[in-house]
Length: 489
Image (cartoon, rainbow, N blue to C red):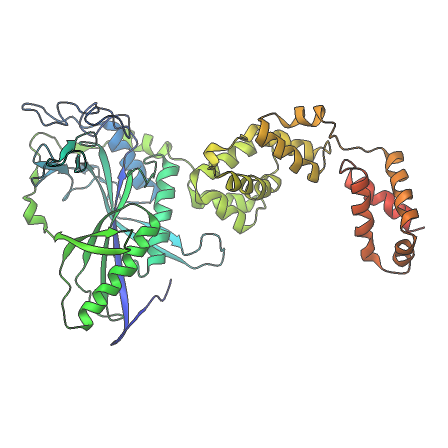
């Protein structure tokens, strides 16, 4: 898909990238308890006795969390394992009250799948590449250590302890920061369409562990490092660039890359060593004795499949079938909230081409100036449909619609009310229009003569002058017809 090479002192190098994405499952409760999984809250206010690992507490799997993992697997055409098992991953840290994490190393709920990405979603000719998914397993999150609350002690917030995560493990199929960025963006989009994760990387509900190694093109795989918990697509791409260059410099100077866990510092735009990388045996995995294996029946799988929405690739093809350009279709489907907003607009009877052009130019332009997201738009799809309907039926002109839209953004009033109260209706009064045309022709006899001698381009001048004289309220089609009649005498 992309020939990304890094030039070193000894020639070209190739980068090999794999991602382990942790996505918080959309659910009202945690993976093994009924405590709230909502973001925020006072420290330790979303903690049950199970989350705090009190003696005698037993975990009970949350069906919805498993359902969301299965639906995600189906959305990437992955193998769904009817039989899966939870393991204990043992390690000791202050934010892990049990002394182990319940995960699924050996028997995950979702097996192999794939995601097709393009380097540039907005370019219909951009090449595609399939990135393999090794597995999706479900596990519980740890708590959070807070080091800035006391001068000599660290505090522990267990609100995240036990929150359900999907760990989505890719194959090392990516060969550039751009490919990794396209993959993570596409994966985030799919999760948001499915509704299994909100994809909010700033709040930590989606984060990536980035595995990077370098090699001579086509050579054997090098030693990889893992950069933990990167929480933005841009930071992930920067971490890959830095880490690949660091490894090349190290190898070319006679050193060796050490398999280790690293952290990315976005302020310095560099990675730094965190700890030596553990292997699976270091965690002493064994089946969790408190949990039975998960067995999925046909009815459960069928319900999961039927609940899936139309996914971005299918939606994009459908939009192109409606006559939208490949560019518009790609932009409209890249983010779930944009597609849902557009669907709502279509549901109010708006023409697809008219609606897509208005949404991507007028609304996005206005929101960009206001510094607002689509979810924060002062104008909702029903109000937008009313405005576009007034243009479609000839009540107002396209230029007047821009003026009405600005007033809608400022006041929250509906388009029809604004048009009525401010007298902005388009006029089809031929007598009034003809009178203005006569005045304009009398004031521009030289241009009339030039037009009649063959300078057809001057027709646009007369249209503009007439629209100006009519304060934008005249029907452009009527103006064109009357001008032609007057000028072509």
